[in-house]
Amino acid sequence: MKKREPAKLSYLLFGIGLAAIGGLISALLARKETRDLLRERSRKSLDYLNQQAAKLRESADEIAKRAKDFVGPHRDSVKTDTAAERQAYHEEKRETLGG
Image 1 (cartoon, rainbow, N blue to C red):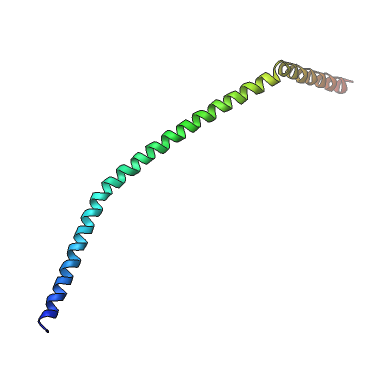
Image 2: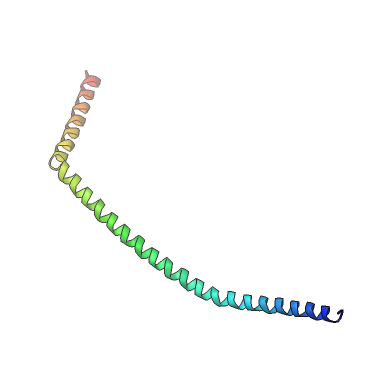
């Protein structure tokens, strides 16, 4: 009975060694597949983000166009009003300093 115990231990160690080697080999092979899988997923994600960005640009352009149409001719009058106010302020300032 004592002769069989060392044999069982050697079989156990041999089995653990084979399992470790098999695990390392499968991990190395799976690493390439994992990288390829991650690369493909990142490409798909990037394509999706580019599509969403294009949609966002289109909607932003549409909103900007609507805002310009809404403001329309009034924006020129706002510029001239502020220019007229600025000129009136400078003239009033000259009169108070000179007077």
